Image (cartoon, rainbow, N blue to C red; front, side, top):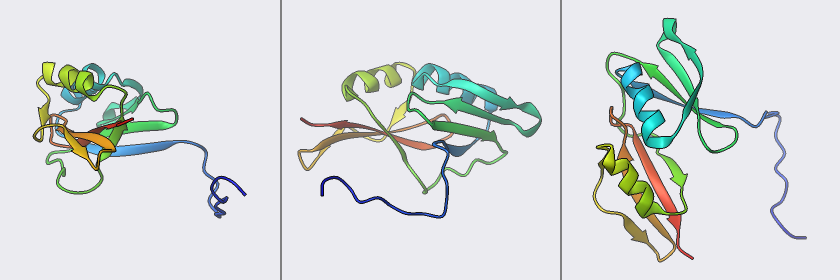
Length: 130
């Protein structure tokens, strides 16, 4: 028997996931997510201060909701696997994106770089070492 065993669940997933984040300024954040990460708006609900953006990953979207005081401490860190972490980092830094220190090598397996959106939501770049 090869591969992973099938997981049985009563939940019938449809292949989509939305990671929802708080932001203080919807327009500023939409601009940053488009320019920095290349995301595109797929749904916007101005009356709720909400927008959903596509990512390059099929079925994974980012939702941003405008609130007075974004809660960005702790919680989940969305990690994007990239082919060239140095190029990705240079692009983000050229837009003024703040990073948490240098790119790190972990166990000779993966290189990681932590960065933040304009409100301090934490993201990470990950490049597998071959």
